[in-house]
Image (cartoon, rainbow, N blue to C red; front, top):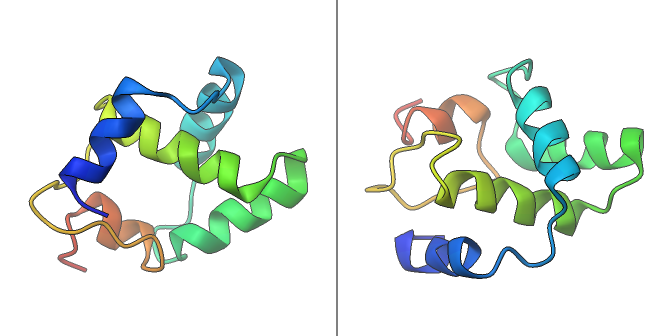
Length: 91
């Protein structure tokens, strides 16, 4: 995913509820930095009963609206660790 792809999440939030954004933002602050992003979203989906696609869209929305800081000069890969995502792919 690149910057152009993220722009659509800023313009069209894909029906992501504010409550979902708040829950995800809170959970991300306590995530294991070595865990893969997609695994965290899967576990969270099972825990709170929100489908993974909605959570992934919420994450993209948080990134596109600069609520979560990531290095957007690197292609985003949600199959890597949170360290990698939040540190721009350097880990």
